[in-house]
Length: 284
Image (cartoon, rainbow, N blue to C red; front, side, top):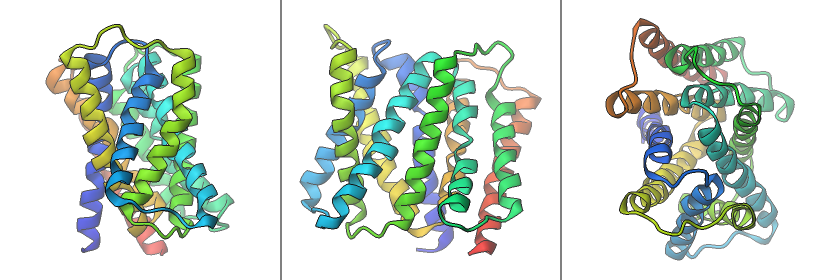
């Protein structure tokens, strides 16, 4: 595959993830973030591992466990807490700092200073998301803000380590083991802090199935395949498409407004993605 085709297929993952906020608020039972995260990832991991039947080498178990916590368990928990406690726009702005965090880990851990242009374009992406989705009416829940930033940091570190740790598994198995470990981390938290809904409607079941099969199995396989072939900052910059997708879905299905400021933000996000790709492409 060409670099462009890899970028385009990897971009499908954040576009799919952009539907999480809509599905969470419109289809899932209220106030059960850990249950939502658990039912999203654990069945997906079991499904992928039942298909691949691959096991990591002995020296890779610890790495897979840590990646499962960072990329899946902690990230998913924080994602759903932020989705329940913050307006979608504010959660998206905070999550969009992930590319900056990947650049920071590249500098601090990898001892490689990314080019200045990459930092500037990554910051421009945060500004673009703010213009696109943030509104003056957004309420600022402190715990939700901490959750969103923690989730962004966990995923940024996980993306960086996923690229630089050489683990001898296929993409499907690599994804499946992370989902399994991340789901097992979420299991006791969900059981201890939340109650199982008395009944599940057809809409609830459809929402959980969509998040599991499309939002997790398909999206994460595409995402981790992209990490194996592209620089971490390039993959992370594509994550800006997630709030763009969420905004467009909200405009189409929830009647959310679109104005000149939103269009400017949209253009700035696209420019940011292209700018990070170009800067890191020259830096290889």
